[in-house]
Image (cartoon, rainbow, N blue to C red; front, top):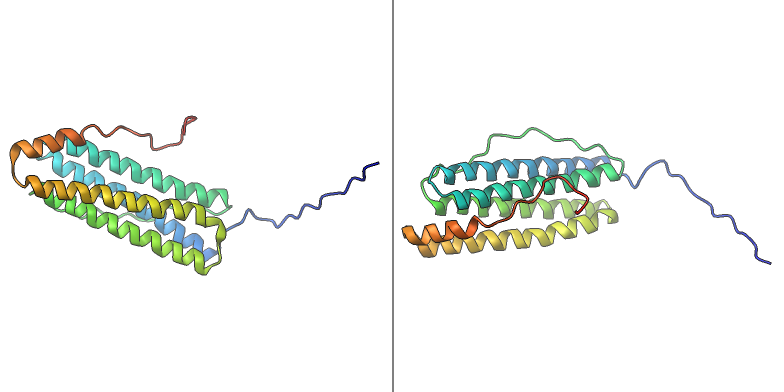
Length: 189
């Protein structure tokens, strides 16, 4: 004879909700990711003006990826019962298209700022004792290492070719092959 033991379900009235301070920090990151998208869009415009459509394509794809990142933070907030809010986004400040090197140097500097912002968010979550944010933030820490490495490699290659027209066109062609990824989740994602 088996005895059924009732399982006690405790309703805490929330879904692992973030503290108000941490919610504000995550919403700040949401805004920062959308701002990063605008920076990459503006950089794409600058290289389009230089007749480098492959580089513009790469930068537009990077802008789309920043929206994917913002959506990950939005989903995290919503899944935990918090309210995602997009803050004010200023006009992107990027170098006017004088040189490809300046454009990709600006992209690298921006990625470094995003990396530090993610580290600050991680430290805030740790301080708050929020273990549930670790998987997401660990993913972003790894993602930022990759992001900086890729842009750094492009910067290095741009420096190698300098103003060599055929070299720039070859790099432009190579960067044109970056595939389009949707910014919103699909059934396949």
